[in-house]
Length: 204
Length: 204
Length: 204
Image 1 (spheres, rainbow over the protein chains, first blue to last red):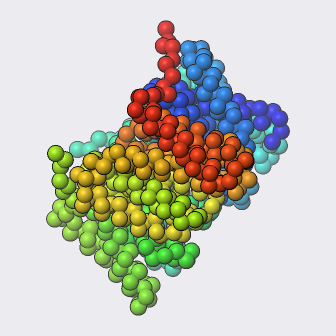
Image 2 (cartoon, one colour; image 1 turned 90 degrees about the vertical axis):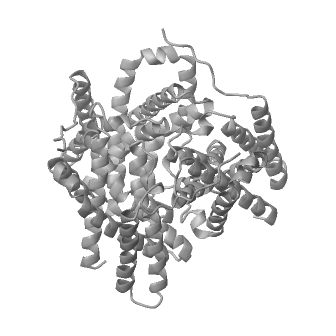
């Protein structure tokens, strides 16, 4: 990965870890619990992707930098909780950039294993979203991404865009365009309260 | 696998996926959430089995057909929800055939890895049941199979029968007999409200 | 492993399995559910460690003794539930010895894979604690170790002590000292109701 991508990858880890730490604080966990919540939120999706592919030891075991970032995120969350909560808008920005990049990174890794495009897109979405699913399960809450903000659907659209574009233009342009697609879908979805819940006919 | 087995394997995937999709709808998840619920219910058990064995990339990554079946199951569930719910009796039939076959398939894969018979039977049961466990955890409910219908015990009995029979007769006869055992135990268990909850002496 | 370590390893498995079986009984699961609860509590942490490392088939698939111990633990729990509950103090003792040894065993396995010390300590803590996390998630409860008894922090301290000591003295002395550290921290933490919940400033 080049430095620009790596920087945003680390930023994404930081933002996801803060989101997990905040969830841990809301659940009144102790320091260890808050740390584990930050860790699984930041690296859970990528870990599941690596396990499914058989790419072991999984990525973060080989690159302790991710763990240091998570430790830093936990420290920041404790020290500046009020400010972190106030930064909600910036968090939304980083978070959306984060899932866009996680989607593309997961997708590319799956393609390296010669998997079909459909499966590659799915692994991209899994990379971007399952950290949050594990966070919610550990908090005893129904997974947020199954309910709101068409979060996962934005990843899905971004993954498809990347896949199509990358056959005609270079990787950098594809990644940036796909990220922009994810960002725009999510931005307008949140602003206009879009929802993908399909009304179903009731029984009886 | 021959075509008969593959057909029933796909039917099992379809039925498990519908069961997961219905759980997702009950939890008021959006389309993505309903899809993930269908996916983990249909392939969660086999995925866990493959991960424990180290058989990676896990099966469904290599065979997108399973994912297409899950997508089809989600579409069917949305389009024909009323009818799907009314088909409860047929679902019970397919579902029972499904777990019987998943048990035997999981068991055989474990034997291919030269594991002991006890462990092989356990992996068979895991293959058949853990999709439902993950479905229930994501729905925020206590796992159904830990509570009702001696579901898992039927798989266990079928696994043991397969293991014993396969030393004396061919695989096809063993599979069919084991499936029949699972079916009969489950059928009579549900009809007669059998339960394996052992009463325990209260403290004090 | 020498016989002394193996004996305590088996004792740890037994005690963790009993703890899981009791949780299953409290949740009113049937025999199968109680068995699965005992199994995941006893082997869940080590299984996750093996999966993350890529050490597959995971340990307990290759050593059915662990499964026999879990079956024995379930039988003991049903037969002697009153006494088992009364043995709370001995359980605390075994449990603490268990997590200490699981921490060190996990840590050593990670070092065999040439991982960094930070990551090795984390894998040790994961080995010791995640069985309990899965047990709690399946019971529908917030994970106990995220909340109480600075359980995980004791493992963490023990892991660090082991790591530092093992560079200067032999493995046996390091293991015993690290276990003593875990035991003492946990003992005094419970007796004096220590807690690691950091008070956070409220918003607004």
